[in-house]
Image 1 (cartoon, rainbow, N blue to C red):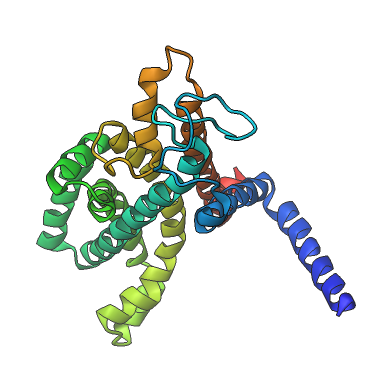
Image 2 (tube, one colour):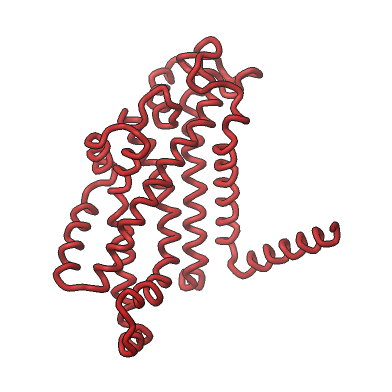
Length: 293
């Protein structure tokens, strides 16, 4: 058993070294990003075991600085900042993942169909998507969030509207170029159905770009969700939320209570950095032309 474990570890280490040599610095960027996100996801899953206190209940005096009892201090209501940061990851990641999934499920099929069918349908859908794309992302998210109201699903839906045009433009552009390839023309001449061509020939060539956009989309969605919460359009209190804690803590920064906003801000930056590193690394790995440059 020990020999098998050693053999597996040697094989894994060898694969890591070969991959690092083959892909270069982008491999390390992707791995570091994956480690950051993996740690945050583990914290999110095991939040009840890691958190020492209830994040919405009074635990001690307000405005206690970081100390041996409270690793990140207490906020203006005497709640444990550390516990709120841990539980806040659940809300932020849930909104980011749901909004990215919603936008991909709508934008990618629309882009594939629009680029493949062409004609008036393509022009109409492209006009709608260009209209959405022309709006500043945060302003569009604010408008949709105000219309839909609070809640994880509603906020995720509001943010999803911001990124649907991104997936649409990406998948449509790839579809327009791929459908002119010889192997697609050959499939058409052999009598392949349009659905078969889309699923078996075009979509596999689009999926690589979708993975990259999805990673970067999550990073941007985290910032958008934090911005909505900061403006009071996110999850209502007392639910722990990084953006809301930033909004509530900024009023106490001049008095010296820096820890109330510092730790949620660090978590927002760290999570965004992790997903951005994954997206940038995958982009360089999956696009050899960029690596060659």
